[in-house]
Length: 283
Image 1 (tube, rainbow, N blue to C red):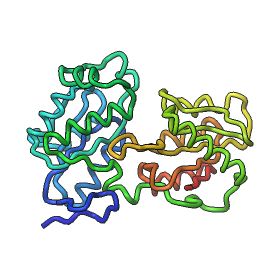
Image 2 (cartoon, helix red, strand yellow):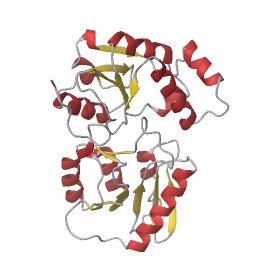
Image 3 (tube, rainbow, N blue to C red):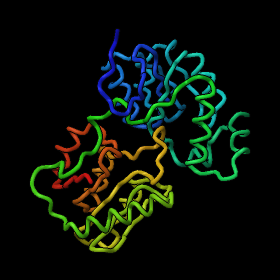
Image 4 (cartoon, rainbow, N blue to C red):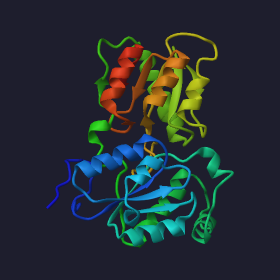
């Protein structure tokens, strides 16, 4: 019998012999998750989003173990999960923000679901999708499952000593948590008690690209999860592209909420951060 790797994010009673479906968005997060599940010996299937999921990830699955849908096709997604005969599902990876406005292809199920909501935000929409999935007998997993070693940890994660002042770090953490509490975004850039940039719908990398408009120093980037984070969706991610955006903007300190930020290819990421002279701190 296959045994899952230890993960504090798997539910009690998780059966590693039953298939897990990855509903995959952009970039490396879904790839990393599939690799971890395969390494654990757990059977995995793929529901790919057309124009979003990496083609090499799609190609790594035989046709019998994958389905491709368009963004917004909730009814087709539910049918895909049933066709793939999975017990568990994971949502990993972002979707292009523009697609949620210009190229969304809602099916009848999605239209009905949206019409049923009094408020349409990430919390209510994700919650409704979770209910639809559980109603067909598929259990949603925490999107950090299998990725325990890829999460931010408490303290300085890069070599040396912390250079940023603790009072400025503490201020940034307070501001980031407040922005997250209001469901605006999951990150801020601060300097000496002043908020310079706030992440909203545009995402982390775009926010960082405008953070150093005044070409100043001692900038601190803080990233945290939402106040009432839905564990099945949208855990904040810190990857190579974010690190490069920090470097381009002259930001030398990142403060990440421990166990609640996914660090893509963490070992390599820490090495690259050190080469850039960037300190990564978990709180």
